[in-house]
Length: 510
Image (cartoon, helix red, strand yellow):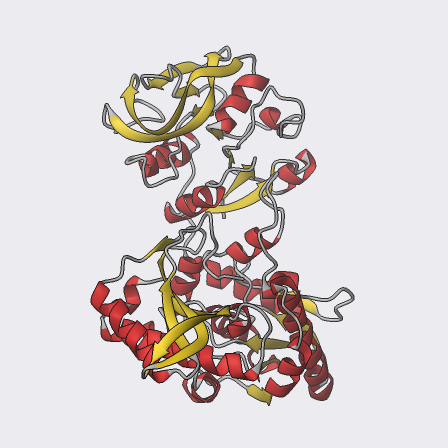
């Protein structure tokens, strides 16, 4: 299988490059810009993409690619900062631009035989840069320009080096996918040989070889990620897989009973159910920090898995439903970027874990996991359920977790889901949920003064969870949700709506 390596220099769009390449049928992986050349060579990429980044190539301490990268003989595409790196290292010159270019621009196509084949002249592209190519490196030809950027696209077809100053990976560049396709297929000579079916075949083979005669335990959360993880492992090792579903007291209303029924009868998985709600609430008592909540919950899960593994006997492997956005947001993988938050699957594991991890979905984005679920025969309704965080309602309850607050949050959350489904917009949304704030507000109910809790309604739209927009809900829907929560949920007298996008916020509040 051919592979495209994306070296990340800190761009907020790097994950989009990986997704767009995969959509074209070519497998892609993201590596930090600091990856040693030996590791890049070992990965045997069929092509390399240099991502954008927030810095200037000529600044002291700016991220640079490993020495010798341009001598590998591999086709390379530089995007924004990436094309400036290419120019900087191959004999060109990059300088600060007098007029910075952020937002839409019109692309003048000067040559349609290569990177810009079949791209319309004056087509819209998306720019985000403050530097420009003053001098193009020897051997390169300028094939595209904009009003403020003379070298918006450059090509050296002899050495198979290409670069664009705009971002072809974002939706605002109308023919960006065509530009990426031209690089991959027309210029780099790759073939579209990656799809979900081939992924399943390769992953089943890999799991079978890894596990051997050992046993695997898999924690089920009730979400798509952990279910697909268990199904693909079950496909590989059959009865060597034992699933554990823990009621941590942080699930939605009725979720534990409904899911146990589905796991055992609908999906024919071997599942052990554990009611540990009291234990989790006890250990979370007094904890306010979201990071401590996540890590406490993660440690408790592992403790219970460890205990059950001892009872089962012979369990060497722990399976997790970790997906690519979890890894990206939890680790400084993105070049010079920072950690956003620890994910339950990634950041909550204790040191000295005696299990070997099996994470079959670690390279997949959420939409790819859903496609895989369909491939494995999971019902569409289950596939398209909204993501639910590993730590459950603990990270939707701001402040200390206790039984009373959980009951308030659980009831409000259930009303929101009921009304969203009633309005016929459930499938349009990425997530719909309630957040309970640790504040009280004055209200009047039944001619009496109240001093009750505040519930936040969060409805967002997204494709992969990496970015998200708040949903412009109809006033009638919001009125129904607000009225029902205030009337039906004891202890709430105020409902507010979260209109924050991601970024700058995250989808979950913690």
